[in-house]
Image 1 (cartoon, each protein chain N blue to C red):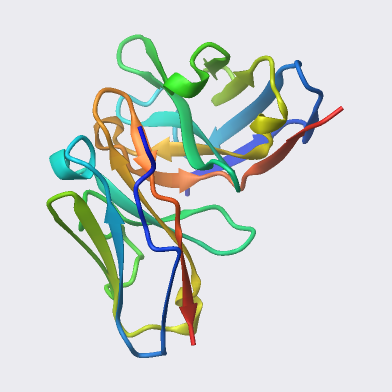
Image 2 (cartoon, chains in turn yellow, green; image 1 turned 90 degrees about the horizontal axis):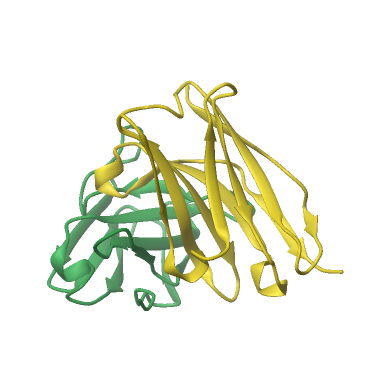
Length: 123
Length: 110
């Protein structure tokens, strides 16, 4: 059974970097089929796809235009996990952050979700 | 791109059928068969209910069905049960590397 286990701090100060990690069990971050995503949810912005990483002979990343200048998603093959870094955060970045799998990268449906991490941006 | 448009709320009685609409544009819902639907109970992560407009993942009840016409996708739940009470979100591929979600619909089972 595939599971995604999220970890990371729930409180980040304004202007600092938000960092979360998603450990994968039952699948591989190096899968040639899947893509590994971060999605966030807030009352003001609803569900918002942030970006993804996937492997097809080499690593690729796609990022949402809204966060492209501030986001990095990295795979860690040694630990079978992937991470999110979001720089220069503001209170607008307060949200529940989910790591999510797209089972087949080309089909853009999110079939497996982590439990979510509430991240609050506040001093 | 703008969020897909869903009704804020719908309601129905146990055993009845309801339909939730999801209206987009010719750039997203209207031009791709990559529409999906998610169920979210309070405090839980969303759960995939429908992929590729009308495909049900393994384990999802056949009471859930999806369809699309033009720029509008729809989720129909038949034989409503109390456990169906939740928020429902639609999602569509919007070309390139972009995807857009609906604002969500709260389903109340009366």
